[in-house]
Length: 243
Image (cartoon, rainbow, N blue to C red; front, side, top):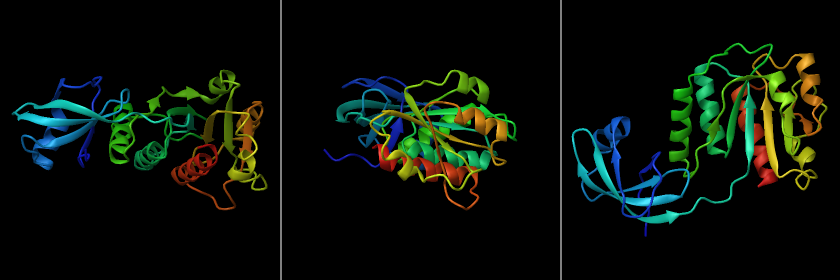
């Protein structure tokens, strides 16, 4: 069966024949922006069971009632890649969230560093951006989002069975991501990448990160990249090797 062009994430676990009540912003979007009609089809996914075809049963003032028809897709096996990052200004943070979600990041871990200039995160907005990016990119899962932690706490509790790609802007003589990881994919099945703030990591922080046994230091080239650009470039390069 052909899938509809409209996809929505719902937090309720989906199964055949159940009714789903769409409210608030999603209700406004379907009713007033897309102007859906009764009997229209909408694809739904819950991040747990896959993607399902639904049919519009009724359009009401406060909600839209959908009935689940049948499953369209199961959730495929996805790479386990964390993004560890220092928060940046909201506009560029939104870009980072969207691109990282589209590229398959499984978990976001915000950290506080010496040069972090934006310590507060709007977690509600962050989650909405993740959901929207998943809806638009045909992704069937939603990344998890951790609370902000200090870099030292992250390092102290970092799992030894997870490779850590350290994009070290302080050393351009390091290997590229491809050259550094091509022989490491058998050693680690789970990965993470750490990106510093606009001011970079301090010398002490660089030593702290590099002290991890699973740390693999890499260079993103000679150019100085903004954090959102560096994040996108790094994730794409890592995924091209590990997927």
